[in-house]
Length: 396
Image 1 (cartoon, rainbow, N blue to C red):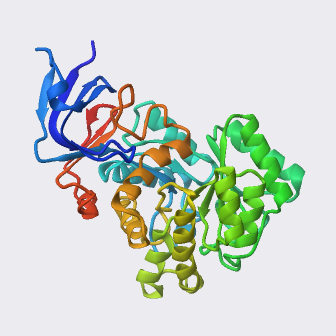
Image 2 (cartoon, rainbow, N blue to C red; image 1 turned 135 degrees about the vertical axis):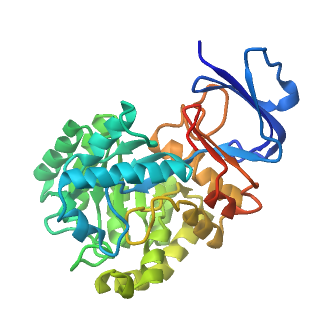
């Protein structure tokens, strides 16, 4: 029989966006939430362990929709990952998984790694070989020849090659496909705003993913590339730096999610060339930062579904500092509650795992955080989490 634990006396933020519940209780059996609500409504049997969390706040574990678990957040992550052995890349991934979990991320989506290392790491977590959050993987990113991310991607030119590239990633075990609609900051010689893969190329990749019951995400920074991807049926736009009113309206109409990753260019600009970041990356980040924030604000006001993601693994975008993204989203106009929902319920819906994860409700998985303060009053409390539970078990 599974162990039963009753947690009592805390303030509950269930992730749905409903107002907090004071003096709450939650009964967990094994890895499943059996009941959650006001503590006085519970009758607890003698064989149930009781944990008193009076004065604490409990919320779901954070779900990060955009991570590169195999990338090290040094000045030039691409230079490192393309010159070291796959074994060393895998070892870095093991270390980064622990960092993510111990900082409150209990589930995430990896959107691009080299040669199947991400897939092996996912399987190793699921098999209990290594410790880390559960996660979804995209395998190699699909990009045009010389396109953004090509050093760790599958280069595809034309509709037939793209179809084959998509099928290769699905065959290898990818949970989703990552498609490069535009240039980006970290690849030398490409312009963040310029379109890369065509509408026709992206459409077949989306077709192949959706046929297999899988989702798609696109690295998309420039307006034309974003529009092409949204029209092609993409499930989420990553970054979305140059959004205009037409694209935003399309995203609302089609239910396309935005994963803003506001911290990615922010940390590049904050640390600069002197920290070892290539000059081209710093210059490009400086050019896009203002538009990035404005696009995020316009999308939020228009009602685009926004899921939290950090792009951890890019320069100085650390694997244990997810809470910075929530703080930047709040700085850009979200309420603290909106940042929490974006990092739990909405992210779970984007990942397609909301049946079991993302909110603290009856029948769902017991992935939760115990916080010293209420994050609605102080988001900084997420940098110093008291304890983290994954699948009903205390991990930190």
